[in-house]
Amino acid sequence: MSTSRRRTDADFIAADGDPLSDDDLSHAGSDDSDEGPSSRPQRDRRAPKRLEEEQDQVEEGQPKKRKGLVRGKQSSKGKGRAWEGDFEHTWDNVQEDERGTLEGAVSGALLSGKTRRILRDTTSIQRGIIRHVYLVIDLSTAMLVREYKSSWLDLTLQYAREFVTEFFDQNPISQMAIVVTRDGQAERLSALGGNPVDHLKVLENKKKLEARGDPSLQNVLNMARSGLSHLPPHGSREVIIILGSLTTCDPGNIHATIRDAEKDRIRVNIIGLAAEMKICKDIASATKGSYSVARDDLFFRELLFEFVAPPPTLAPSTSHVLGGPSATAPTSSADLMVMGFPQLVQASYPAICSCHTKLKSSGYSCPRCKSRICDVPTECKVCGLTVVNAPQLARSYRHLFPVANYTLISHPTATQPPTCFSCAFPFSEIAITATLLPDLSPLGRYACPKCENHFCLDCDKLVHDALGFCPGCC
Image 1 (cartoon, rainbow, N blue to C red):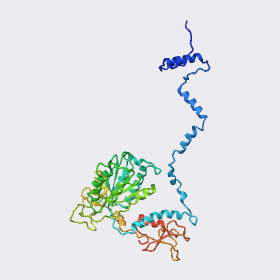
Image 2 (cartoon, rainbow, N blue to C red; image 1 turned 90 degrees about the vertical axis):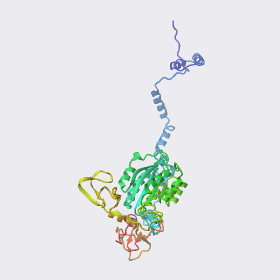
Image 3 (cartoon, one colour; image 1 turned 45 degrees about the vertical axis):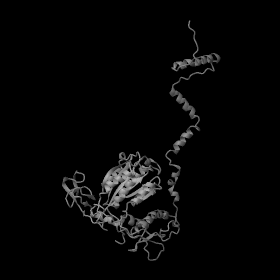
Image 4 (tube, rainbow, N blue to C red; image 1 turned 90 degrees about the horizontal axis):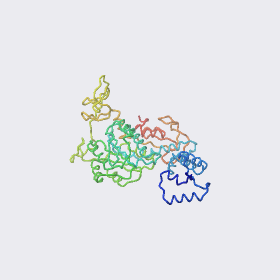
């Protein structure tokens, strides 16, 4: 006859497959005999999903401990850092003038660019209209830092696309190449050319712009030397580097590479995003370039767009007129080069272009060898002739003959015109006395020293930055 026995915790533990010692068994037996049925511990064998549901129900009864933390995390998500608050309420700094308008604040923002242009254009210097530029973008892991409400990489690519468009608009007969540096190497994404569409396609391709590794300034300089050293001396050789890393992974002695770049007359300009570096200052000073560190995103854009205008030409060196180095024949003050003006052709039968080797029914015809060319300005692949359009060449000359700076009018007279000569905007009769900058005209009038016509600040900026000629003098 079998006797029944009450189950204890030891039975359940053993059923789960956990090993038990003799002490555990004896302790379980003593607990079973000493304690009553109401005080015996029972093992909860309910499903884990049901346990989690009951725990959530218990925790919902305590909203101050759990939901408050979750709500706090969700509210802080999407906000910037504490020191980024200066960029969120920029409208708080805008103040009204005596007339109750915002004209003074807007004029002050426009005047900041006008003051830099005056300081740059008043000096009589020689500039080159044919430029060969390497735009280098740092694609290291340091560019993934989120500091200007977006990562350095996204901001750099956005400004680079705007810079390419503005560069070819102001320098139509110049050429550019896009280079990136990552994993200790330098990679050329687009070849040296004068078609901005090719460069914009590269900058919009996210698959080729993945950030990884460390940059290498030495490999960048070596690639720039290999692509710029053989070019003729009548065109400038420039390198613009956007650097966000504080380190550089170089395979050799970078100072020897800097000396070689200086001998090849390559001007290196660097824009830093993090902090100032000694090696960047050495590169810029040795190659007659510039090195600046951006304080914020707006200043970063201003530094980049400073390179839209052609830089001053370097001192004459011992080089042949057609590009070959010569120790006996120094470069003359004005080198001459051969250019061709092509004719637009619309053919009924397609022909193979010399630049892409594709069938094209329309294009330009080289005036020397009559080969088909897709876009201008470019260099003919067959005969090597530089092919440009006459309007593009005329537009490039405006950097050599800049418009004279307009003088501000601070005192009203009876003979002054009531409206702007260019846009017919009526001038204010009440002078703004509380101006923030001393170069701002209290009347909003700026006069051309040649034709003596009056212009507003908007037209003054448009004439000097975009048009390149005075409407009153024409």
